[in-house]
Length: 390
Picture: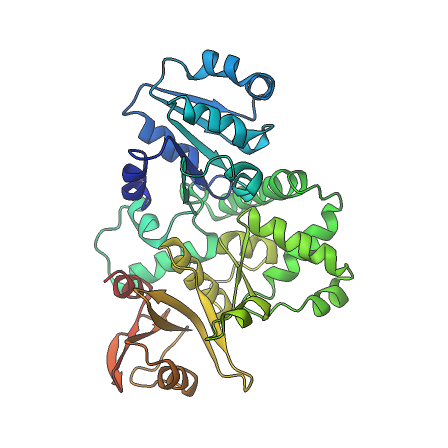
């Protein structure tokens, strides 16, 4: 069963304006399935650049490639085009020759200046992540549900993640096997090959270290000491993993924008299923740091770039998002006592005067109260998304 993705509305608008539309995101997040479904409305052609014959013709002569594979089609889907030589220059030729092209990539190498500099004004980029909780619920045909049914769905989505292939099976051991295969492919193909990393064992050790420290401040010094790799290697691994959509670096929120650049980031995984596979922790009872990572991933999927707030005196709020030029602080709890706002959140509200604040909990407790002119919502994950969408 095909599940319509949240990006469709934006996609439908973009393809009317730009000759090149790029869908980027992690391997097996649904990019190809989405584009193939949209291409059914047109006379279209699908080309996978893992195929050496297709890639060789593109690399050697773009005009011959155009005549062989593009001519006569309204839309051409070019899958994993980042593996080609001079991709930006050749995509520019196709765009300037009035060809409509949809492209995909499982690595942000496609978004590098070597490609994008040729496509200014010709391309729009959409990121596609694994299924959000709303897409997950739709895949399970859950339109109306009790709190206990929602809680079971949240646990499954948080524990095994949102990759379509993982969601499509019910057997837990098979879910783990699919996640392991996906991780192996991502490490060996998207990360190691694309970013020229030879020491796979140290990359895997590094991945495990990060998976066990989600939500913590990243210290290069501590990383280097604990797993005995150099600062430069740490930076290379972090960059490669982030550009392959495995992890995300969350930066601090400050009034001083320069401090946001120089202060330590926190690391979260884009898919909590992969995180659990790497850390070997598929727990029946959710842990606070995992639920925090899960909330982060859902914020990312609805279009926010979350930051965190932390002071020298160690006052901290888990996430800060910016909505309509206003900041919204979000605190994440497994259990939240309604009517109780902790000192950290109160301090942020007093200093930054947000219009709303959110305390999101796994246990689905709902309430509202006011602190000054700020409305504080106690809610669950779906409630958080509704508040931020309103």
